[in-house]
Length: 123
Image (cartoon, rainbow, N blue to C red):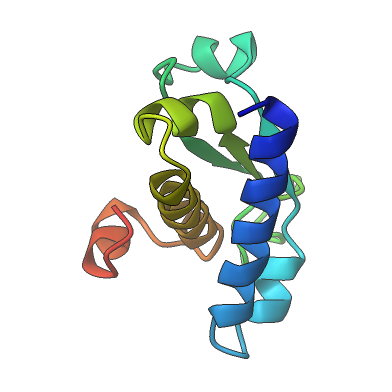
C-alpha cells in the first residue's frame, strides 16, 4: 500500500470516527486539523518521543487557550508508516489503529490525561 493509499484510508477513517462522536463534540473535533505524516520529524524525536510513535497532539488544549501563555494552534499528527507497521500491513487493523490513535490524541485536545484516556479505553 502506498503512502497516498494510507492517507486516503486514514482520512476516511478519521471522518467516520468524527461522525460517530457525540453531537456536542463533533464541531470541536472538526476544528482540530489532522496532519498525515509518514514518520515523526527530527524535532519531534528531539523532544524525546520514540521513533515508532503512532500519533501526537500539539498545541493548546480546548479551554486553555487563554490561560496566560500564548495559545498554540491545536493539531493532531498521525504517523502513517508507524501505524501501518504496527498493524502488520493489515488494512482492517490499520483502520482500527488510526481510529484509536486519533481518539487518543483528540482526548489530549479535550484536556484528558493518560489516566482519563485509559478510563475511556483510549490508551
